[in-house]
Length: 105
Image (cartoon, rainbow, N blue to C red):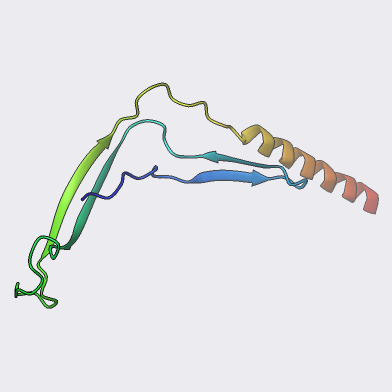
């Protein structure tokens, strides 16, 4: 049996503001991709476990290489974009630093 297809090759970008507002966005592609891998295991489910199969633990081993193409169907979902929130938080922090500098003078 092949392993389940991966959710995607990436992860997520996230930002949490100083007030605790959190935004996260997936960096996975919403398009198709190719999944390659190797799956393996013992064949003890297919053979009588009392027999001698020539391996250390008595069960024959198997491996299979596979390739699968994942093609999403339907309309691509709308993606969340945290870039604006990130820019606003940077501007806010810069202005707070400037206010602190002015207050020290």
